[in-house]
Image (cartoon, rainbow, N blue to C red; front, side):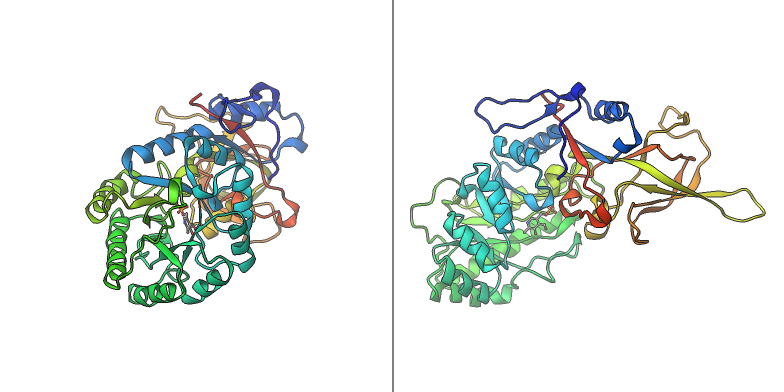
Length: 435
Ligand code: PLP
């Protein structure tokens, strides 16, 4: 990513003694960094889109998680946003990490994370990536089919395996069930294959889908996982095939309750509502020796990132010749092929807000604009007409050079963004408003 040092006015180093060092972090409020950064730009060439990341939001989410689900250890799903300062913040807080590939494993191991604090949570893995995990002693990994078991047997026979079962994902925005998860009717067969191959199955996992909007989805899936454990027990399968060498995070039978927890302030069901149902079901179904882990992604980062974009071009459209109704198309310098890929891949509906405009706009006390509003659409910078961020949105008349911002842009944004048409990913300025 195109990270740049903070401008001088926010360039304070944050150091945390023995903890992993988080670099170039100020403690200014996000709004000051947004405005100060704009003030520091003195030519059009510098008007690139940029993020402000408030690491305090990551910390607060971690504490909220531990408070509401004290039994569950969060392993951050780094696919969601592999930003180094976010990862370091979570390392310092004691989180584990969910990796999906060799590259992610490498990143997290290079930051000094112990292999025992990592789960390789991709049920269908490239052989060379499994080999890398074996070489680096990342033992805990998921599977959901018999072929994967044979692959693992050949490459990493001492791996500690977690069987991913199919949960009901009908109440989530991004459904994974079409791709991953063994149905309950296959659990017995898979456990027997594992047993015949003398592989260690240490737990069960599920993922209710990303962006879950029903608080019961997680607790329902825990009941399903309990059925899977029971099937194993009936088969005389003792999941606790532990060799005694495992320390810290993987020395127990494991239940992995997935990701899908909403970010702070997200529309729909809240983390609090999910936790209120999930915690008691876990306790009712699983005795204390069962270790419970989760792999939240968006939960930690969604609202930690704010994206500022510049209006580079504008097209005024007269809706009809006989009246003066205007419609505007605005062209900004980040789009669907960059940060806003979340519109396609994560069903996100970004809401543009005005950061800086040449005209003075007047607001009511409730922050409602006291201006004439026009139907507007917002487009990304590439030459593709699919590169659209919002349509039929009501905005006052904006001009070239004005700035917009978008809240809650931390999940599945830059992580999956490309540099298509040569448009680089936005740089990131960091703050931590807690310290
Ligand atoms: N775990 C696994 C295996 C996933 O595939 C994903 C998302 O793709 C996550 C966790 C994180 O999901 P979320 O960001 O919705 O918490």
